[in-house]
Length: 427
Image (cartoon, rainbow, N blue to C red; front, top):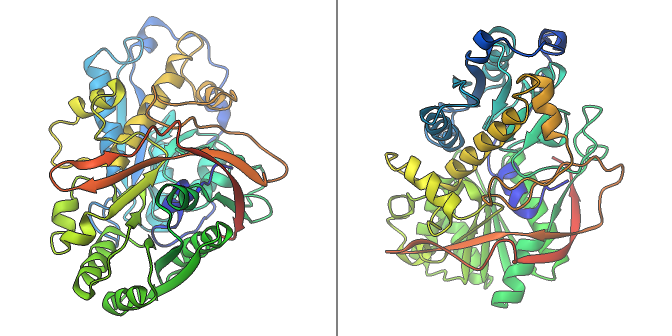
């Protein structure tokens, strides 16, 4: 699977995981249709976007992919849609709960009969089994939980090599992540001691264990710091990582927690080579989020699997930025939501002659060819390997924050690549 250290960051950065059963809409309702008549060809192509917009984590924590996808479809429709057919986007806020997620899945899949889901960003993707049973392609979702490495017809934004055939995550319940991020900081910056900060919450702790294993596999001395999710004492954690001589700090916490941790690090004088965060925190709101931590703020680094949204010299990024000029903020998750919408559009365009159905879109996703969304993504692949790979060559996108300049890319993401071991962990 492609649960790299960067991709796995999204899987572990936040909270509750879970799945639940639901009803199935027969695939026969959507397959084997005749070529559309001229009237049918003019009908909208309906897609669904599920986001935990009002989750307990905060109102804007999960809306980036949704906003990026919607911006893409708005632009697409202004240019004539797909073969003259507009894309009709049905949004659903699941409230960050499994019950709400199942309700959204039922509404979009069974009632609205969407052709596909796009850019799903769910705190608790409880409806994933229902989506899979209905054979609805879910394209470019954020792997906050293990669903995209568990079920067929679900295609996370970072790809997967897992079997995805029996409802079990990964290989017999074990997922794998690479060590390329840690290799990068060791080789490029000579770091040898790293701290890992997490909440005492299952998903956060699980990702922290993966980071710790990966760092140790790369030869780091690791300092672990776990804080209470409800009443975190970041100052104590910051003081300890200073005393331990941490050169790098990795986290499995949200944006608000990162800001508090950074302030605590500045307050106690904990200076590091890099405060490394994940793709969810790769946003333009850094000056506001970290306003009380100027030193730590300028030590922020982010890693991911997509091209820096600040790289406006790239044509695909510039297209995204031009279309989202009206948004108050920009983020890497918005760019990945945009890429997910482009992915669906390319799939749907391949189906114009035969008819844009769930089955045809799914076949495009399963064609076995890497996908880059015009260069926005490090090539994404889906395979079904019976055994997990022991090593893998993996590339990563790296950026660091600079006041007055924003996120500055560090090298070419398609050339910053390492052959690294794959570390197993339980979600």
